[in-house]
Amino acid sequence: MNPPMPDLAPLRLTKHHGAGNDFLVLVDVGNAAPLDTDLIRALCDRRFGIGADGMIRILDGGSEADLAMDLHNADGSQAEMSGNGMRCLAQAAVGAGLVSPSTFTVSTLAGVKTVEYCPSERADTAVASVDMGVAALGPDQPQQFAEQRARQVDLGNPHLVLLGPDPREVDVRELGSRLQGVHPGGINVEFVAVGPGPDAITLRVWERGVGETEACGTGSAAAAAAVRSWGLVGDSVEVHNPGGTLQVDFVGDRLRLSGPVRKVADLVIDPRSVLDAARP
Image (cartoon, rainbow, N blue to C red):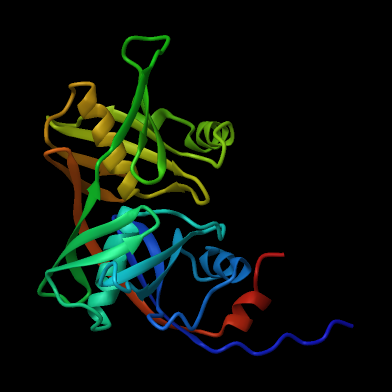
């Protein structure tokens, strides 16, 4: 018989979303509660756990920044950066009194990011924007049909942007998982069409380590950068994700992602109960 596993201290989490892209956030500035892969996967499971696209720990930023972000995808794998995750982190950090609006910095695996945070009249809603840095554009990849385009974009994490038919008609699960599988280390895949209006694009996304999500911040920025490089939008782009609209603005060679963020819940979690209830 296996010995019983030790009790684990309760976790005090908050849950937030940006355009439906949701995250569990743990304030851990003392780095006292590292989370293992099994627990992250169990917490993020939408049927057997709490449910989220990813897990964020807020750490002390040391000499580099005000705060640091430790980000994991729903499958437990570590991720370099998330635009919506960063905006959720901002709301949690302000709510916990770690920083004050309006501007602060966060260290990530993709570099130090500057966040602007604007509270609303409601305590659970705000608007947050993130300096996403410079998009590194790969070569324009030849396609069979003139109305289709493809380009890889790096924003500290990898993206493949595919311009084509209405994204609503794309089998995102089948095509996204297949394209992700042929790229070493995986890749985020954005399916994009121009419109519905000028300087607007419509997007669905397959995120590595998660699957299809309601929105993607880095994906929205990458898609806007690629479509702008093809001359189809200008310097201020509305990105229509299934979960809501995000704004991407180009300031010189840098991108800024903006949009609403909302707190969903305060949670006190017994890690042992979550692990015991995890998917078989």
